Amino acid sequence: MAVFDKKENACFESLFKSYYAKLIFFANKYVNDFEVAEELVSEVYANIWEKKDYHRISSLKPSFLYTSVKNASISWLRHQKIKSEYVEYLQRHHMVEPVLDEDALEEKDLEQFVNKAISQLPPRCQAVFKASRFDKRMNKEIAAELNISVKTVERQISIAISRLRLQLSNILSWLILVLPFFKA
Image (tube, rainbow, N blue to C red; front, side, top):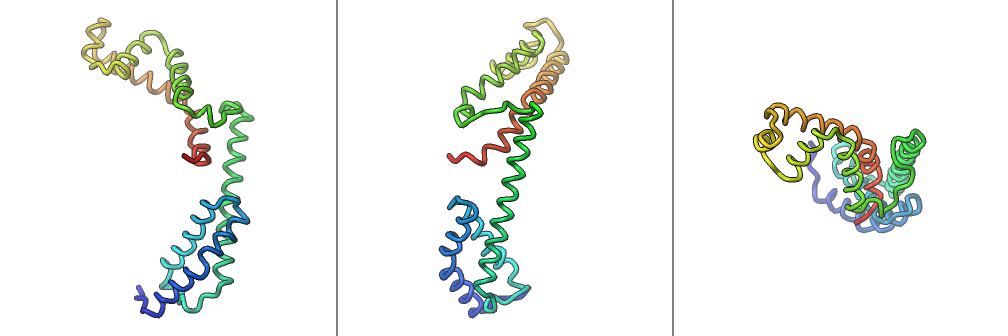
């Protein structure tokens, strides 16, 4: 691994100070989001720093920086398009609810999705799951109360988790895809 001398470090610092802000504005023309633009430019600089073995920073031209940022921006846009197309695909095939806006992501609404899924479990499975997860009761206690074996309690909990995972997988997939678009 090549060790950068002071001249190369100074060149990198100069490139950073001279072009960082300009490159953010340049990237923003593509992505229309200053935070994303800043991330992309930071990644370009990080890549240059990580690959310092392969090229001398003193020989880098501003055009290289602009081309790198342009390519990173276009790549980001392509990725966003793919994510958007995937969400549309899921909606077309009724794998997610068609329209869920920011309000639908509130905790009470998510709780409603979960409660609806729990209500669709068989009665014994539902009772065991609620006692275990909501009432925080031990499997032994649940078994004694319902007059069933501990193994049956364990099996009912396993069934409940499997069914809930299956029923909630669509909303969870949607959340995983969509949550990055919402800022806190």
